[in-house]
Length: 143
Image (cartoon, rainbow, N blue to C red):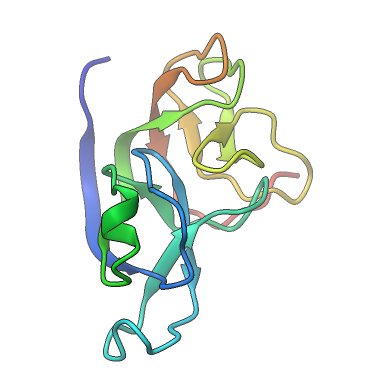
């Protein structure tokens, strides 16, 4: 399935506590505004740091470390539609996906209480495979 097809995305400020490059498909969470980098920006984001974290979407682009370290970087976050993500291991087509414990990746084996990001539209064979994901922002936890 070639390409991405976002329905809804927005550029949001990266939290100034982020100290790593952002890669395409990184699960993103809302972060507190520390008011040091952008006092007027109510919503800031950071990469998810744990499996099944409550994410608002996936990064729609790569942001290099130099830009992140300025403390004033914006990242395009895809909230709804089809986008790319990096698998942390094998994922079956049609599986619900969640943020992975591995920074910047998704997981296809949600545990009870993990928040579902979307549905895998392609299968991943191994860690590092890039697949299409249909984002389904419901905030529902896996039962």
